[in-house]
Amino acid sequence: GKVVILGVGKSGIIGQKIAATMTSAGTAALYLHPSDALHGGLGIVQPNDVVIMLSNSGETDEIVATLPYLKNRQVAIVAIVGNVNSTLARRADVVLDASVDKEACPLNLAPTTSTTEAPTTTFTEPSTTTTTAPVAAGIAAYFLLEELEEGAGGPFLVPVYRPASAEPDLATASMEALVAGPSEDETAGTPSISTAIPEGTSVLGVEVENGRAAVDLSDEFDDGGGSFSMFARLAQVVYTLTRVDGVDEVEFTIEGQPVTVFSGEGIELDGPQARADYYDQLPPIFVDSPAWGEPITSPVHASGLSNVFEAVSQVMLTDDDGLTLFEDTVTATCGTGCWGEWELDIPYTIDREQFGSLIVWENSAEDGSRINIREYPVQLR
Image (cartoon, rainbow, N blue to C red; front, side, top):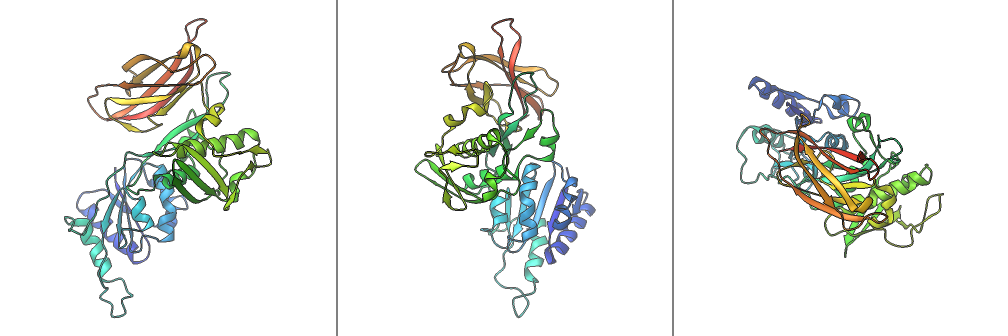
């Protein structure tokens, strides 16, 4: 991969200097202006790249606006900031503290000392004031996955992996990843990933207390769509938030107002919503963990829900050549007309990091053929 550096104003000039120095030292690097990034320039950023973002305040509008798109591309983000409590610092994977007590400018206005500190922070060992945020295991946003099997219905819910920063508010981070939507690659893929949440929807707040997440969304959330779209977007929010540890149910408000009847479809929300309220948005065999695209290590713990004949499903893990690394039968806690939970540990051995596939299916009781197939890409490590 390469290094892509973003910054605005004086930080942009420093970013250009860092990129030039890295290139001279043999590291592929380039400078990308955040405004250009938001108008198509992000196409140059690939999943194996590292993005360095410079902002003294950590709140620069153009910088912050690129974060959801960079998260969708699953790149590592390094923030060089003067405020380690800023939005940029909270969302980054690694944070370098470039704060200074005072600028050399007699009015403390021109960025002199701080812009000198930025490249020094980049190319020297971190000082005692440099903080490195640990990389969290990741979060998941629940989107909708196209079903390719004839007559399978759908699309149904699918958890999609997103890297998480070290910020403690994973509920808010998960919701922001959800409203950002699937990436262009995910939308264009086969099967395709989509969302029922309208473009322009904003997260106005998330509060978690006593196992309940209260989420406040902008009024775009109930725009357009028929009953399927309305139930699907509610399910997306409920499953995304209840994946966060300590959250069992979700309470909706729109623009600060409690929602008892949702949308023109008249969907009654007669209390906090739980996962069981939206089983109709699940495929017959639902893999809840690991998520689509998630990095995993051996043994990986897989789990989910199913509603299949006699509660019996098959689980397989393959490598990037399609060779079987693991295969076993799993029995859920209920089946044949009811939803049950299933789980198992999957050990595997590989000689290098690679993409693999987690595949689940049911053997037909009629002819033994595979039905209700679901396949997730995973990063084998």
